[in-house]
Length: 404
Image 1 (tube, rainbow, N blue to C red):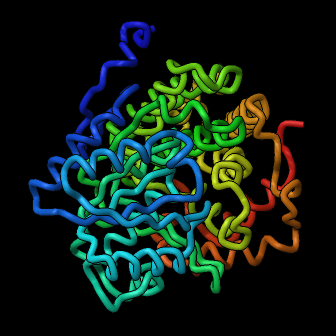
Image 2: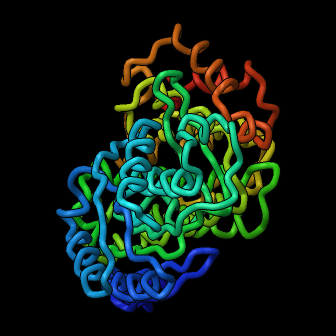
């Protein structure tokens, strides 16, 4: 139990292309960040966030105090919703332009950070829209500097080059990936995460698990992605039940935040495939659907599909959730059922039919999976041939439980 040797109150630096301040109390590093921004000549920033968590967690107090101390003016855009859309990004970019903002501070979970990253691109491309960005009408090479203050343990967006925003009019939920949107600095402070609801705690952690199941099994997966995947699933299996039982358990929040961070780095390296490509149409059609729940409903059927192609990898990665796997391709159904049982055990007990999806909706979801910009790229690196029929089988197999 190496975790017992870790001081959760010691703030560490974790470097990828982003410098992440990680640990309980890391939010105090906002002062150092503001000092560095000022040294770079930044005197005006746009804060991008949702409606409440940025204040309830206390993060906003640190941001405003640091800005005041270093002579940085700010304007606040707080219109980001779960599954953010292009209208919100356009509005934030307009506000940034009117204010003369030179950088973005995104405060929240994946939704706020992804919206902030997208806004940072538009700040460097006046006249362009979020719709053009997410339909790949142009390829950005620069963005305004980004600071991410992460308030959930699931996204990984605070340390990678990805962002996702919905084009509501088309039911499209594409993903972008550009080096220019790696945050300059990020903060992962588990003290800011103890107020997450049981539902949020569950589904953000399940998002992290999905990140690594996919990243470790793509056609471009590396040993690095597999190693991070093994650690991520071990940590989530150990600490998610503890956080669900006691939301104030700082140790549990710390390690779940760490798992989510390394999962984000894992898929920055190994990328993603079926589960995210097939979930995006679900929440593209229904923006009220929690992303992590959508992933949870699909994951068992995806595992059954890909297990024969990546049996040894999945036996290792899934060991804490599905003990007894040997890497035999014939274990596909066993692996899928074991993972679904684990999902149900942590409260993720809904399937597509429970969320209002019907068998007659499957064809529409299949079509969106193949027509939404960027999702074809994910499907192209799946470990099995991603045909319309295989995608249809995953959706159909996710309507009801497979382990009952």
